[in-house]
Length: 171
Image 1 (cartoon, rainbow, N blue to C red):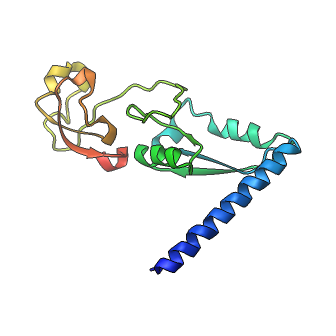
Image 2: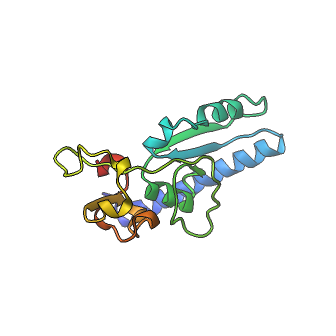
C-alpha cells in the first residue's frame, strides 16, 4: 500500500514516462517512422469469428518498412474495452458496442446473428429453438450482456434476470 507521498511520486513518474513515450513517438514521426504502442482489445469470442482479419491486418501493419511500433493485444469485457478507449489505454476496440458513449467512433466490420441458448435441465433444452417464435420464449428468464440490460427489440419485454459482461460468464 502506497503512502500519500508514494502515490504522488508514482503519479509524477508515470506522467514523465508517458511524456517521454509521446516525445519518442513525435520524433519518430518527424523521421517518417511509425513508432509507439498500438493497443487493440476485443473479447474472446471475436477472435474465433469467421470474418476475423486482425492477424492479417497486424501483419501488414508491422511489415511496413518505416514501422518500429509495437502492438499490444488485450481481451476483456465490452465495459473494459469502452473504458480503456475513453481513458486512452486502448486505441482500437473490437466488439459490439450498442451503448458506447459519445466521442467513440464506431465502424461496422462484420455482422453476426444472435442466438438464444439454454442449459441442460431447462424446459427448452431439447427443443429446436428455430421452431419457436419470440413470444414462445418470453415467459422464460434471460441472461444478457451487461450493455443489453434494456430488452432486445426482437424479444420485446423479455425478463432479464441475470446480467454478465461475457459469454463465458453468462454460460
